[in-house]
Amino acid sequence: MLLMRDMPSIKRDFVASKLRFQVNRLNDVLRNIEEEKFDPYYADNRLREVEVDIRGLRKLYQNEIE
Image 1 (cartoon, one colour):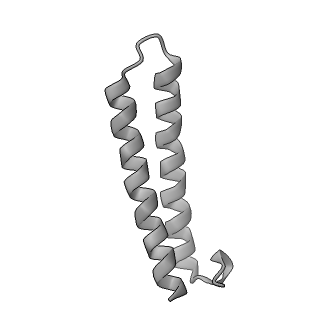
Image 2 (tube, rainbow, N blue to C red):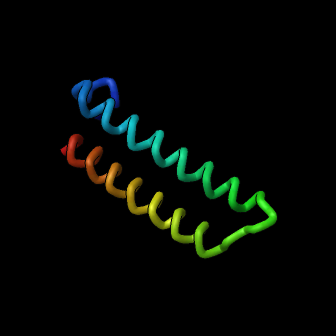
């Protein structure tokens, strides 16, 4: 089983950076939900963006395994 520590440093940094970006997006969605001016379309679009990006990261990771 391939672990993150087995990936080249540049790929680990790339994955970590992408994950941090997704955390920031999720924090934006959370703030939007908690505000009085909640916009469900904004939240839906941002969550879809996060989902698509995380799927891309999973594919990248799976390609490293194979």
